[in-house]
Length: 148
Image 1 (cartoon, rainbow, N blue to C red):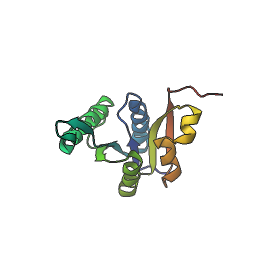
Image 2: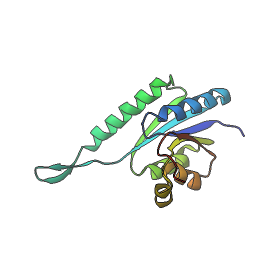
Image 3: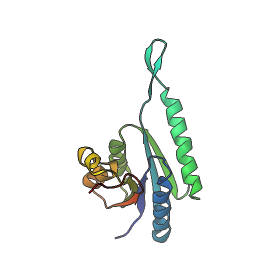
Image 4: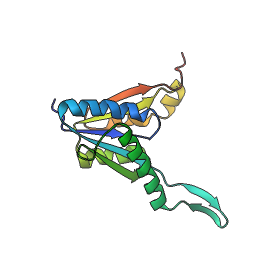
């Protein structure tokens, strides 16, 4: 399998650096390009006139800054690593990125979750694995302990 492009979805939590570090190592070995993608949701807040929202430009700017911080923490440069920030449901944003960027591999993290929660609501990583038409490498990170 030849790898020219790797997609790294991130929720910007601490464990995201692990997926990016692994993807960077694979990209270096394969001389591939990295695409780091983050989805953010609109934020609704109570205000004096009822519910309001934080301006989308502020949300996007904040998400982009946090994404750039993550990318720079892994010493990725703009020649080999691009970033994508989009508002929306994480699964939809990731699958849209797969459609547009056409990566050869997806590398992402997934927290271990309690069995009942996993059955009732699959993780984003599990949903990507089921719906993406490219190989997906999932790193398990510490989280809820599995119940017997």
